[in-house]
Amino acid sequence: MAVALVAVSTSGPLIAATTAPAMAIAFWRNGLATLVIAPYAFLRRAPRAEILSLSRREVRLALLAGLVLALHFATWVPSLRYTSVASSTALVATQPVWAALIARAFGHRVPRRAWFGIGVALAGVVVLTGVDVAVSGRALVGDVLALLGAVFAAAYVFTGAAVRATVSTTTYTLLCYGSAAVLLLGVCLVGGVALSGYSSEDWARIVALVLGAQLLGHSLFNVVLRTTSPVVVSLAILFEMPGATLIAALTLGQVPPPAILPAAALLLVGVGLVVTSQRDLPAIPAE
Image (cartoon, rainbow, N blue to C red; front, side, top):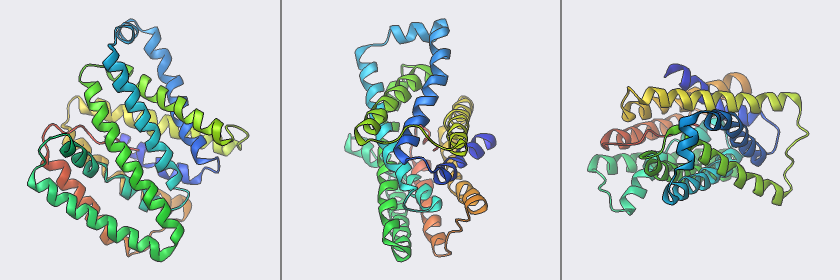
């Protein structure tokens, strides 16, 4: 879990340090991950047989998960061009709050403790965005994009939970990452986003992002989930927030202002209350 946490904590700083277009980073992150997973899925008998036997419902849900995952990356990755790693990572970590609200919209009961946590977390959002507005109006754009990224991440978890009930992790991630990559590629082509011509340093950062946060981090968290409660894993993933902030401070010089600390504390406490108040909660995804 510690190795996975370090891996995912590098995500925000790597994206912030990469000068390639944000949408291109989002595409390559999913596209390269798909290329790594595909041989494993198609060359092994069990995953290949499962892919061929998927029902229409399972395929539709997996593709829907890919759509909302693409929307997540299309909002969160660009947010790091406008606001700090600390603010973006903190705001995208509110995804359990939005997951609880989505569950409520679909008729699921939300415990009183979770409602209290939602209130605390939203108070943290207000304080953090207020701090960023005081710094620059541009940062507010990044905050809004990070919050949208959190909402789409919550929808991704909600949809993915339905698919994962009957579909293996390998098959699900192949379809999900693959469809997200296709959608993001389409956006890049329509928008005229450059998909190549980057410096060797940028390519190295993109590869590190794919191998570290996308594959190593997520894969290890999936391994941990076999023997550890999703609630414990979700709480551990919240430490990505201070981890990414520390890495960004050391490598990018992005030292957050002291005023952000109360907001971060409110977010951690609020999201923690939401996570620990719900049974059978799918682990929140790390970045």
